Length: 222
Image (cartoon, helix red, strand yellow):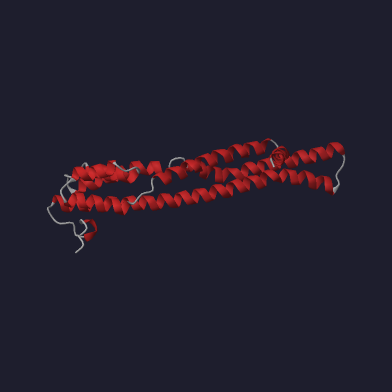
């Protein structure tokens, strides 16, 4: 298998090694993003419920400790808002918006690399094909042998790079769209959680009960 891979790389020429480098970079970024999003996984509704219970009990410090005890961006954003919990709702909302914008950059980090690979990989492969066809016709001109079999052999070798570039591009597009979807969903989740926190803090500061049972302590079973 390994010898066949080396043979394929040699048939495609130096352009195949460039495509291999591009694919390795893309794979490394994809793995990094997968690990990153996996580390962000958590029960946001459960966390908000616990925070709401702490706020309802007038225990902002306890709510902050809940956030510091958990990993991920959402707990950091909620902690950022809780540390400004005594301010008015507009100030809390502004603070949460700033925190959301700062963490949005982390969500999109390195994603442009995958998008770039998806765009350039077919062109890199096509460039290798053009060079391969030029070389094939030069060999034909030098040898004076222009039978269909010789031409077909040279062209088939040249098309290896185009096929490889297209495969890399398709995989890169799949990863790019997947991560864009994850970013959109996670960003929406953080916006909703931040707004819910701002609402809870607003009712806490105005001395009003939080108008939903979702954030109240569970009732004891009779």
